[in-house]
Figure 1 (cartoon, rainbow, N blue to C red):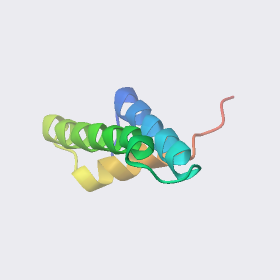
Figure 2 (tube, rainbow, N blue to C red):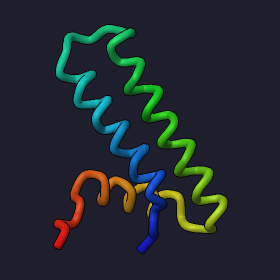
Figure 3 (cartoon, rainbow, N blue to C red):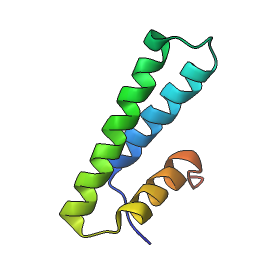
Length: 75
């Protein structure tokens, strides 16, 4: 299984949080811009990390999403 960096996981969380905020309000370009920007930053980071580590890009993105959306309980 691909192992995303902590930075990649954090970028994924930021994008998810921005999506939740954007979709909880009435649509506007200004309201959705932070989500688009966060999603673009996450996607670019996935591409860059995959190139740097040799990981499969799709698997790396899936792994980051899994950790960001379904973190393992501590303890």
